Image 1 (cartoon, rainbow, N blue to C red):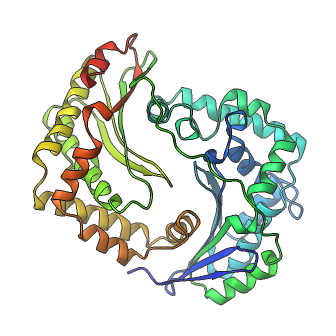
Image 2: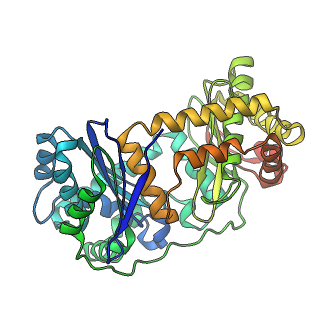
Length: 423
């Protein structure tokens, strides 16, 4: 089982969480920041993502992206970052004897990036290409359309990277102001997992970041479920129809969140799930079909994705709706729930054998929730879920009138699909 974690909070509010893995050869260091698309107004959409990119383009001590890359390559490590709706993360995974160098590099990236104007213009072009690539990815487009149907006119309903117009308009001064506002000690977590001692980590973070200002970060924008079309369609001459059926889910700390996770496993996670067996194995209508859960601080979503021949799109949507109705009305047997539970438990435990995943487990929970649940606690919560819990949630969340549907494919009208939802 995964090891106990330790936590220290520095006087400036910077949180440090560690898990010692004595048998590991590696150490993973992650720096989590409360910055993401939920912190952005429409006019600055994508600024969190832009700032994250720029942190890799040079710092006061390592002035170019090449300087940064050479440090990482010289120790055989891995460095990366990412921006989501509620957080930004920078992480490095290195051999345990290079821990100090990895920590110092990450703290440099988030505390003293240069934002060289020429590099910023080059990176703006890179991000615009990243946005353009989404237009060539029908599955990504389908999920974005689904988000916009669930949360119209809200940051949760738009691309984390922003829009072409917003990215083109972001100035260096705006980006630096955002960095100064959000990248402050009280809004950060340093999470370390691997062959490392907690006090060693605390001492090193104190040396390089203990005197950073605490700061007063901006707040995230609450979710709004506003009204809007229940079916969103993007016309594209694709070989397949890309379908995303979504429902509002549960927030990150909701007591039923583990029941919802197992509901998703039953529906569409794994090759023994209901949707996989019905749509692929029994009927041969799809190659890919799956469900997933997203959870945020005050909202959530359950998504079902499938890709099929456009001529079969109506049938696939109708069959998915039938499976949802069967779960609502008939529930599930204890044996089916047990299979789903073991799949979910196995995935969790296998993932946490990796020091990078373990540092992410620590840092993400601490940043968003202010505490870390141990794997043992999570497994116990999964064990407590009953078939009645799953059926109750299906009845609450998967009513036809509450569903939203997004499609990308060679369709001119939403009408044929809206009728399936009773919209």
